[in-house]
Image 1 (cartoon, protein in one colour):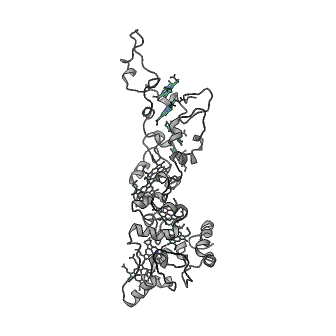
Image 2: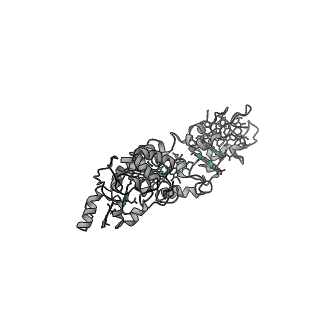
Image 3: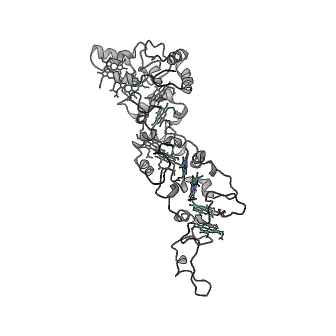
Length: 325
Ligand code: HEC
Ligand code: HEC
Ligand code: HEC
Ligand code: HEC
Ligand code: HEC
Ligand code: HEC
Ligand code: HEC
Ligand code: HEC
Ligand code: HEC
Ligand code: HEC
């Protein structure tokens, strides 16, 4: 395999279906599939490609574009440039005879919906099969907001930036800001990426996550939290994001609030006082039965709840109910 941008095995297998065996053989030999294209078989978006056009003829005027996609799967498409740009032979004729561009489809200027339609003629499958109707699609984010066919910067996946997260940050500034907080997933350290939890093409799952629900996403890596436990804590089963912000927090361990306030979002003075600044918890507050002596609950002041309830995510010790040890 000595194509300039190595074509992986999986992609090669897919390419068999898309391109036919003869194209594959040429691809494997590393030959750019630009010359003498044979009959078109792949349906494309509103195009009338002329199969006689040799992409080398385009290079005289569009050298950077031709170079930019050389060695990529798109350079090996049976209809070459015509796969995306429509009537390229009409254009060629027009520029040479009249000096005018004529009938050419410009994807640099096209509306997002038209770009997506063009790309999806071939890509409405795999990860991209639910893109149409996804939040990104509905908000006019197009394939070319993140990808470039001719001037991509990433080693894989033809992204506009070298690292996938930088592609996302061009729009998601708030998420970037959260990632700079003291507690964060090691995204900026490059150990995990947005794509570990999200699929930016996903249109069928909540928040473009890779799994059907949030907790399931977290458990793909944090398997020790999966349980089942002898003593369960209901919110942990329900949704990890009730207590953690996956994108970053200034509280310890990605927590959405400081302790004990985190716990007190749900637990008020049930059974034993948990509220710090409740009057029953101040020295002037609670009076014990007729003695006139005031007491302070030892369970909240100066104690985070986890001092006693260590197994916040659930525990298995037979003698440890109430999420204790
Ligand atoms: C003789 C020079 C010449 C040749 C050869 C040529 N083009 Fe062009 N092409 C032009 C000119 C001039 C424009 C208009 C540029 C502009 O409007 O900025 C253009 C515009 C385009 C555009 C639209 C660019 C945009 O986004 O605005 C595409 C796509 C394109 N050409 C593709 C091709 C393809 C594919 C071939 C080969 C089949 C080809 N061209 C051959 C001169 C040429
Ligand atoms: C898979 C679809 C696809 C194929 C195949 C394709 N292009 Fe493009 N082309 C695009 C898109 C999308 C853009 C918009 C800029 C980008 O994504 O890089 C574009 C932009 C251009 C431009 C305008 C340059 C610019 O950045 O404004 C020219 C010229 C061009 N293509 C020529 C060609 C030529 C010549 C070929 C054949 C060698 C070709 N294209 C093959 C999708 C394609
Ligand atoms: C005529 C069919 C066709 C069209 C139209 C097309 N592609 Fe592709 N594309 C392919 C094939 C075939 C491959 C290689 C196999 C695969 O990944 O599905 C590919 C691969 C890709 C890849 C992966 C490249 C890599 O290095 O892994 C990206 C990203 C991509 N296309 C984006 C686009 C975008 C964006 C558009 C629209 C501007 C587009 N494609 C239009 C056929 C097409
Ligand atoms: C919001 C950014 C974004 C948009 C919009 C987007 N992609 Fe992608 N795409 C990515 C990223 C990032 C990857 C790398 C793999 C990943 O994280 O899913 C990728 C990977 C791919 C791949 C490589 C194979 C795969 O599925 O993993 C193809 C093909 C592809 N995209 C095609 C498209 C097409 C076609 C569109 C438009 C219909 C599109 N993408 C829209 C960001 C985007
Ligand atoms: C061109 C701008 C743009 C880029 C680039 C972009 N997004 Fe988005 N994204 C949006 C818009 C607009 C929305 C909808 C409003 C919002 O939630 O901010 C959105 C929403 C989302 C959502 C929420 C979906 C939901 O169901 O609420 C996720 C998750 C997301 N994007 C992930 C990503 C990832 C991951 C990347 C990088 C691979 C990325 N985005 C790149 C514009 C973009
Ligand atoms: C560890 C997993 C994980 C990583 C890594 C991750 N996200 Fe998320 N993201 C989530 C979860 C879970 C939600 C849903 C949160 C909710 O609904 O409470 C979400 C929601 C979002 C949303 C919707 C708005 C919001 O704040 O809820 C956007 C936009 C988003 N993520 C973008 C990104 C981007 C961009 C990256 C990369 C920098 C990224 N995410 C990395 C798990 C992750
Ligand atoms: C792709 C794997 C992956 C996924 C998915 C994932 N995490 Fe993580 N998580 C990590 C890694 C790696 C660390 C850092 C561990 C370390 O530094 O020792 C981490 C650390 C954490 C930490 C501790 C942070 C700290 O400051 O010490 C919390 C809390 C956490 N993750 C919660 C979540 C939640 C909630 C989700 C789901 C929204 C999630 N994780 C999804 C990989 C993942
Ligand atoms: C009721 C609130 C709550 C929920 C819900 C919750 N956590 Fe936590 N999590 C905490 C607290 C509090 C800490 C800090 C414990 C400490 O400081 O010792 C923590 C710490 C962590 C840590 C880092 C320390 C460790 O124990 O490894 C990870 C990873 C983590 N949680 C993952 C998850 C995952 C995954 C889920 C969902 C399955 C989840 N959490 C649900 C409250 C919660
Ligand atoms: C999102 C709401 C929520 C948050 C935040 C929360 N809890 Fe809970 N907790 C619950 C629910 C719901 C139950 C189950 C109540 C029941 O079964 O009656 C529960 C039960 C408990 C129990 C009793 C378990 C048992 O075995 O009966 C303890 C102890 C507990 N939580 C401690 C904590 C601590 C400590 C924190 C902070 C780290 C916390 N909780 C944060 C919702 C929450
Ligand atoms: C000094 C140890 C200690 C501290 C600190 C503590 N607890 Fe408890 N908690 C217990 C013990 C022991 C039980 C068992 C039942 C009882 O004695 O009331 C319990 C029971 C519970 C229960 C389950 C019983 C019920 O009331 O429904 C919840 C919920 C609870 N604690 C929440 C909290 C929260 C929230 C905090 C922090 C504000 C906290 N606890 C701080 C020791 C403690």
